Every structure is written in C-alpha cells, then in structure tokens.
Length: 381
Image 1 (cartoon, rainbow, N blue to C red):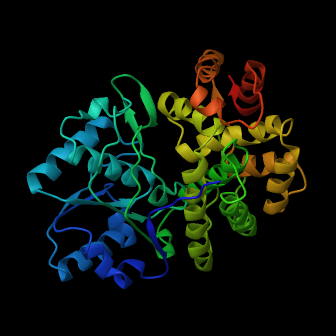
Image 2: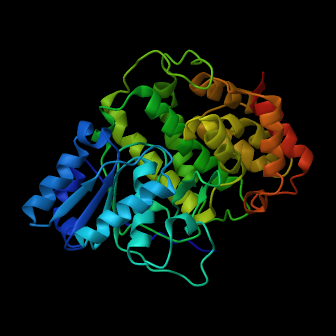
C-alpha cells in the first residue's frame, strides 16, 4: 500500500496572511497566474499581493486564464514568465488557474518542450518551477494533486498532461467562496463528489488511501442539504438554480471537502466518469463539474456488479438509501444534458479506446457497459 502527498497544506481563515513567511520563502520573483475577474473580486489576489509586497517579492500578474486552459494560454504565460525572470508560479482560482500555473511551471524550466507538445509522454521525468496554489472554488482539488488538465484546440484534445506537478504549498481559505455564485459552488462540489466516488470505485483503492474519500464523502453528505436548497432541477445542461446563498459557516467545510477529494485522486487518479466528461466539455461546452456528474449514477450502477459493498458504503456515507436517491440528487443539482445521437455515439466509441480510464474500473467493464452508461446519462434529442 502507498500514500503520498508532498504538498504543504494549510486550511484556515486568513490562510495566506497567516503563512506569509512560507509563501515568501518559495522564491524571489513570482508570476501570478489567474483568471480575469474572480480572484480580484473575492479578495484572494489582494491577499497574495499584500504578502508579496510586504516581503519585497517582485511579481507580475497574468490574468488571462480561461475555463479549460489552452496550450496557447499556457505558452503566452510562459513567455511572460521568462521575460520577467520568474522563478516560481502562484496559481489563484479554480482548477483552470491552478492547472495552468502547473503547466507554466513545467515549461518555464524546460524550454525544449513546446506548449503544443505538452501532452506527449516524456522520455524521462522533468523538473518544474515551484508552484503555490490558492484555490477559490470547492471542487477540483488541484492544489493537492499532481494533475494539470490542458486543452489543445488545434487537435481537439482535452486531457491531463503526463507530468507530475504537485504544488509545493497550498493555502486554502473558505472565505473566498463568499462571493461565488451558487451555481459555481454546486458545479465544483459535484466535481469533488466525483473525485471521491471514482477514488473508491477504483482498482488503486487501498486501506490507506480510502481514508480520504470516505471521510470526504461523510462531509459531503453533511452539506448536501445546503447545495440542494432551492435547486429546482436547473434547466437544460445544468443552468443556474434559484439563487440561494450557501451559509457562511459551510464555506470552510466545502473547501476542506474539496481538498480531501483532491488528495483522494492524487492516490488513485480519476476514473471513467472523468474520462467521459472531457468530450462533453470540449465538444458540447458543458462545464466540467456537471459534465462529470451526468455520468456518476450510471457508473455507480455498473460498478455495483463488481464491488457492491463499496457502492453501499458510498451511499451510506452520503446519507442516501439507494442508487436511485443518488441519481435523483444529482438531477436536482445539475439537471440533464441533451446531445445528438451522433455525438453520443462518437463519445462512446472514443471512450471504448480509453484504456487509461477503463483499466481503473474494479471489474471487467464491457463495451456494452460503456454504451449503457451513455444511454442512461445523456438525453438524445
């Protein structure tokens, strides 16, 4: 059995300020990688720059990261980092910003790797510049995983790059969720749920690494009522439910659950629902959280043939009676997704060749099982 998370993690209120010394000790010149608006709006960017200013650490802000960051964006940020002589990267935001920060950290010290070639398997392990992660959403857990999901639009590819890039320091503060829209909180929380479900329903699951998803699922079950509050199914493709603020006391719990979920997949990797989600995001424009969530219930059903005790454990930890309650809960949170029959068939055909995900299923999953998951998960127009 093996368990390994090298990231130095702090989860608390005013986390960035409280650990300013650790942040400033990472390097001498920082490139801050973030999105266009949220880091400024929620105060996380200001917290980080105040610490850097106090510590006399020069920094430059790259605030052009889009949802599902592209190789073009990563390449542009790397060029700026080179010109600035940055020696460490700070990712502030959701998974997109932190994943982009990881990719920049890799390219910064490996000038022989072209951004468009970042998905190619390396001939040997590569070093990377230090990364500090300041998450502001409660889903991806990228602050504690070695994973960076990057999109190459030139070849219509969205997947993890084959490089291990753990952040050196993760500063996790629930207060940054206070300005987030409920739809964003729900979507990212569903992603965290998927991380924990896929970590347990996984051939790499063992006694040590199951501690994370089992505890995280218990926490998720305790906060699901707040996520479900006023969620009237949404509309097509998981549009926003009626606006209802999450109680402020739950912010820290949501972030804790997300980080635990990230630690879960750092041990096992994600499985089939994540593999299925990438085509849905890339070709149908569905946000990542719902894109994964649409496949969870059917995946649970298929895995019940192989590891019924694990499925029963997941449902029990979430406070659900059966798989149908699990399906109904997800439908209330993210609604349904409609695609063309041609699109669904193309996605299914591609997934049948995705052995990196299929081989993680704790049983002999068949092509018919894959077709079943798609049929049960997506509405055909």
